[in-house]
Amino acid sequence: MATDRRLARRRLDERFDQLRPLARSPRPHRGWLRAIRDALGMSTTEMAKRMGVIQQRVSQLEQNEVSDRIELGTLRQAADALNCDLVYVLLPRTPLEDAVRKQARRKAGAIVEPVAHHSRLEDQSLTAADTQAQVDELAERLIDHRDLWREPGRNR
Figure 1 (tube, rainbow, N blue to C red):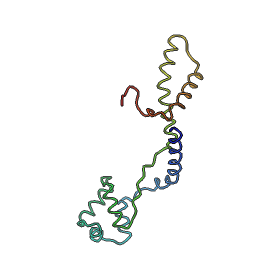
Figure 2: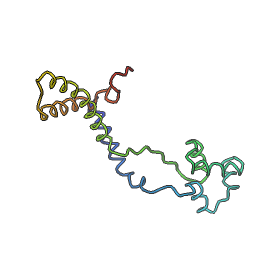
Figure 3: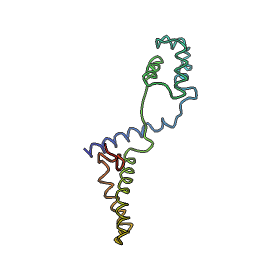
Figure 4: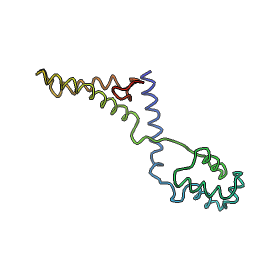
């Protein structure tokens, strides 16, 4: 199971690497719908006919896109009317493997640090290197644990 998740993360990260250049290309200031419609020389009236809506609805959709209020299904319908494919992707800001490892280290640190603190109070402190080794070891075990993202003290 853990190997499956690691493989899935690796495959997704590879796909995301190909898409990252697209994320650096901003949406046109008037939105994709308007930019494509204008480039095609299509009026709002013609687009409305192709969508089966009234002309004012097209103007509203274009405004909703710019203000991030358009619904995905509606955007897909408008894309069809423009003979376009809608490509929908959530592009992680960092590789998934890095995000999982960071979370595992954070969680491991939150588990190990109170124990290390208690040991220092009892004059049985571990060296910083020993504490770090414990965090590293625990983080490796936590990477694909199903509760990795659950906050401490929270039940399902």
